[in-house]
Image 1 (cartoon, rainbow, N blue to C red):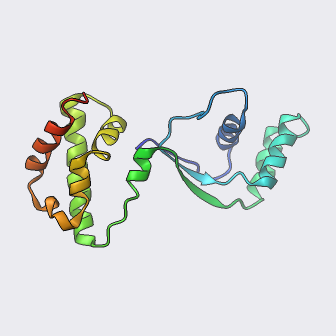
Image 2 (image 1 turned 90 degrees about the vertical axis):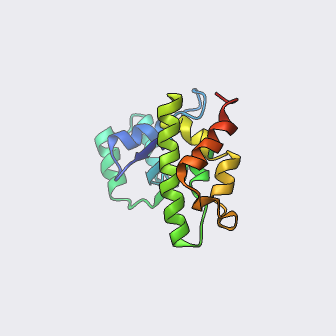
Image 3 (image 1 turned 45 degrees about the vertical axis):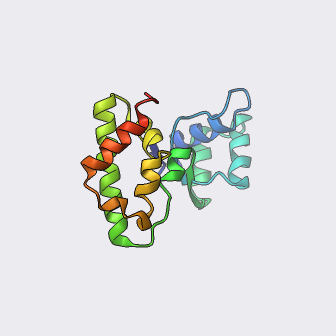
Length: 159
């Protein structure tokens, strides 16, 4: 996943917030799958407007925002990131699913010469992954090589 984490309010975070609120550019203004960091709430937006109007400096803006104790958020921006949220109740099953998915993603990247993000967009919507992520099918108990062979057949027409 293409993930961006802002650990605290910073110049980079302010510029990112302003970029995403800029009405003069097409949106989305980034290509991240997941973004984590402080929330730009109403108080923060007011401070940003003061900065945009040149009424305060960037340093003063950051100082004001640093002490405003913003709340924290995780934003899932793409379908691929939402597929990663699928909840599984059985921890053993979850562990096998995670390991198998990682192997399948690596194989897709290597064999089809695509990026990891593209591999995610291939794997998670596939029928193979739907079967793999359903514990009742017990598909996850098959060797990863067998699962990958079936997946390659399914996706060969996509690539």
